[in-house]
Amino acid sequence: PSHPLSPPCAAQAQILLAIGIIEHQSEWKIKPHYMAAGGKPGDLKGLKSFWDPIGLTSKMDAKKLERQRLSEIKNGRLAMIGIVSVLIANNMPGAIPLPIAFPAGPSLVLPF
Image (tube, rainbow, N blue to C red; front, side):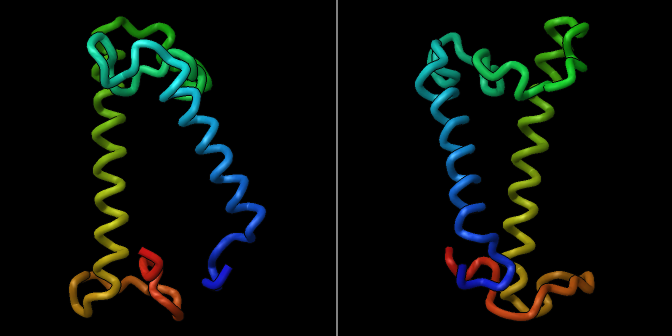
């Protein structure tokens, strides 16, 4: 790892392997695909316990569960936009009005 905050190579490989397994399960094994007719974003039948590992939604009715999933997808998208915005704004002096102390060294978005 060239960046001082990068995880070791073995940890990076483990993260990529976990993402690969999740992608394999959700993209190739679950039918219908969530983007095909009859599929729903956030409805991972093969990974049911992944989305709700402790069973908080087991007693919800279908309408409330659908709203919760949609809210989770929207929150995730907003979180991704927020993180990317802060990382990019780190390279623009004065772009963030709050005093955020970024670690010294190369930019975190430099590889991208």
